[in-house]
Length: 237
Image (cartoon, rainbow, N blue to C red; front, top):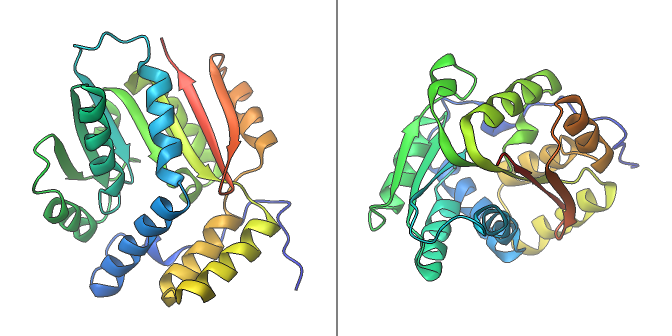
């Protein structure tokens, strides 16, 4: 069957239910983190952070927010990355699912530089918070176009240094390759279902360029990265 990727899918994902809990959720979060590490997805975000802080004095504390943090794997890797660079990071993760946040805290007990909060980023209280850098890894595609414009406008006001978006390239080839990954690694039904929907809710490069122009974002870079990701770095300085 032919896969139509001309328009972003509006189909929901199982994970969009913020009240979801249980073993299946935790297993799915683990598998997503595992796939990100295996395919090099987290490195895209780390390199984005590196680009944003290259002119920031080494002794300056940098606050970094990870939006839709999942089980916290990205933040734990970022913590280790900061220590390797001898940088002082203060890391915060937010997620709208309380079970997810509790699980992330349990996995991050050895990381005193990471805090987690259960919060819906569409609510007014979120827009009152400010950070140096905001990360959005595999999260933006969960939202509709008008919500994305709203969030990106808010992120630009909240992030002093800049923003790193790491999200999916909507592609029929990516869809078919993900199906192959599901077979090879025997992924559970939630990972399979949400992964396929996620790809169809991903982006085309021209859409992100158009959004950048619409929001008057001048200083940014947008690059395709393996495996079928876009790295969108916005510099607010």
